[in-house]
Amino acid sequence: MKRRQALRHSGAFLVMLVAGCVSTTDDDSNSSVDADDSGNETKDRQQSDGKRPSEFDTPSEFESCPQRILYYSRLPPVVQAEIDIAFAKGQYETDGELFWDQIDGGAEALYYEGYYEPHVDGEDGGSDGTQTLTFYETTVTEPLSIAINTQVDGRYTGWLTVTDQDGSELRNERFEVTDESHSEINLGDVELGEYDIHVSVEDHNEANKTLPNDYFDERPIMVTIEENRLRITPPPDDGGHARCAWNEQGKLDFGG
Image 1: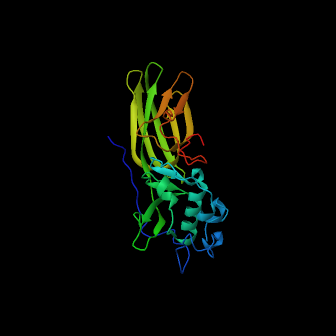
Image 2: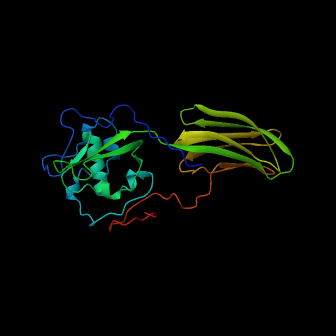
């Protein structure tokens, strides 16, 4: 089964935050990024110090990231500057190089204290030679399942409760496992984020753990009944989902 994903538009262009002119060109020397224009969290997360993309020394080319989500905090500063303008002014427009286009290898979302779907107009050079970068608030989901097994002989009955960070209960389910059979509880597609998992086993122990639902790639969270405890563990990290970062030469550096 292929990973199921969902990216839903909010129904409105939520990053168009100021009235009047909502575009800014990289060649307009009188324009600047004013965090107060945004009226929201931009001034807290802006990392480009108000510099325009044309003010950065950049490598001749950036490698593109093949992953489905890009993280603002790990992007090159010149790309952060483009994003800062897009969020503060509603869109970023340039008749020069659009560096987002270089680093984006088909990302479905940008994580910027929330998930946003990127959109580029004029990717082959618009009719007037400009390109425009905008972002729409979106929802990203991943499959979430929990496998329960025992390392102790016998049959065990228990209860699993999964709660999201808003306190909403996603699942409250009874299960049975033996040393010869496990139980797997599938919650379907859920939004990326943290989830509280509570497991209790009759005549045994109980355990709580908060885990992120982030790139599980259809591998389940594991609940293991051991002799004197319950253990809740996420899928092992095989390195396949390391987040893209870039070095000063524009090369991908997953350890960055």
